[in-house]
Image 1 (cartoon, rainbow over the protein chains, first blue to last red):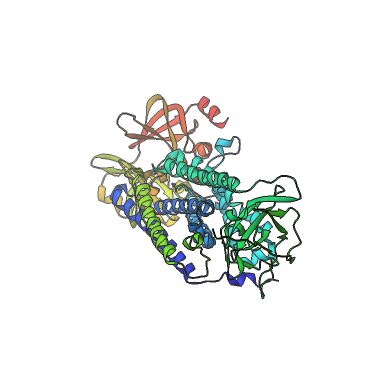
Image 2: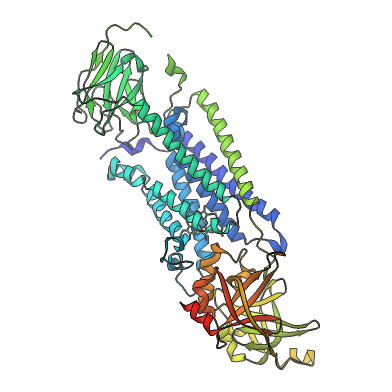
Length: 351
Length: 257
Ligand code: HEM
């Protein structure tokens, strides 16, 4: 077993991240209650539980939107990487806020009656005869179950034991959850539109999340070097790689390779996916002679793609050669942790 | 080299100063956005009317209790008869406890629910209804002995089917599509159903308590249609200050589909 998950413990940056997040959450909810109280008082006062339900739900929805924007934003601009680094705390907090919202809804709308409250969430207020009649709260409930699953498996323990690919696949369920929540709002609150700004909230969220993903994907495919079907893949002039940085090469067979240049003159290629959480090593850097993953700082040695002891992660390595100005990467990956010669460029005229 | 300015950051390391400044800005923007969106969404909420649910202290009201088909306490006042619909705590009608007192003088203790001219009493147990012989009927001198039901003629009305308890003030808002599931559970529990008709020019709301053609409760019948728009026809009846719609047979057939 790996000692890997110990590296992502609590530290000062994480505490600041969490503090700002919770200040924003509390500010949002307190503001919501105060503004509602000022707008409707006395006989016109709205039910505090319903107002709280709305404050929590819209807060969770905004958090989820933010959460889904971090990935593509970090791909577009490296300055957003620190947000990504602690994204899981945002995810777990989103679940907690959504859970409180759901708890109030079940308590207020479904309890104290002749029907089992949980059953009522799925059966009351609609039918399964037509798509448009499906009770909107059922969508919310399924989304909540997904968010729970993701929050419960967010710890590195699960990442290590499920394996990075399965863990990543599981956590891609956040997208279906988000779509279910959009349906939850479209089928419910948007029909009543008691909160007049919901359409803007939903359209804004969809446009922002969708737009950022499309732009980031577009950039990515543009940035990747596309490769022909030879044994060696031309990665372009080595000068295009910044020192201590990498370019990501699409090998054309669903594999991506991170090609690093470091110490000005050395070149090495490894698999792009970090063993920890499939983080993009090609967006990382070389620091103190180690490849560093931009997501959680996992390190690999350029020589053999192994994490320095006591860690045991290993990634595939690739052979590299230089012809003229161009670097080439061998298409066939070497087994994880295989040592191979590091290519040294001879005539480096600084530039 | 260019990457010196790129300020690469790994989470557990100390943040470079340039990046730190960037994140001070990002944090401020996030806090401002949180406050702004919260203000905007909260401020855009719609009114849910003037219903109130006075849970601070229970009230005791005396009058003639009749169950026809829903329990109502008719109270004689200077302005005429004031009719208080009666319901139970939670999502249940009060028929079970009230029917034993049908057509008798009682005192009822419960939380008042009021909206406009509408009155409702929420009771918690059997003991909240007590025979009134001892005190209250003698105070007034002339206790109500009967409250006549007047037939006003046939009517066809379009509006939303709601559960009267939530609509009259227990839930704000207690109507509309979002409240549908709750209204359904309330009606299943026997809360009197009402058809709320809105005068589109004035925004005034009129409520008609709905009953079946045979004069029995329509709660269960209408449960699945709660919080939806419906056109119902029947006989309009007034009893006390309440208006009832007694459905036509044909209407019932259409309802049960
Ligand atoms: C068992 C699960 C859930 C139930 C029973 C539930 C129930 C409800 C109800 C009753 C409303 C209408 C509230 C009102 O305006 O009076 C609502 C609205 C909403 N819900 Fe949920 N919900 C659940 C899960 C979720 C989850 C996981 C999210 C994720 C963020 C969410 C987000 C929202 C949003 C954004 C609204 C619209 C704003 C509002 O009117 O409150 N809900 N939900």
